[in-house]
Image (cartoon, rainbow, N blue to C red; front, side, top):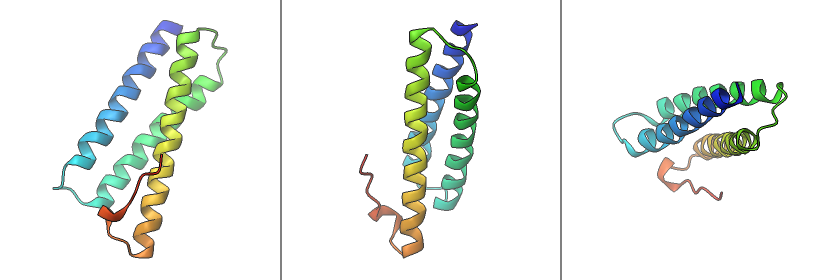
Length: 100
């Protein structure tokens, strides 16, 4: 069961990273649509992290995957909040810095 969860978490993490890279490199889509897609992806990651936290996991690899996923989730929320804040201040989207 832990191996299965580890595989699912690794796949979700990989897809999340690919999503962020693909979506923010494409200039055809609007910024707000990208932010909404990122928010939906972060909610999915948060659901997986919360579900995994509710289980008794002893596998070190699985715990490391969970820690990595949690850190990526927090960075994603930070980016999303920071980006939306700068848009609200009237800064152009290309002026946003990622201080991670």
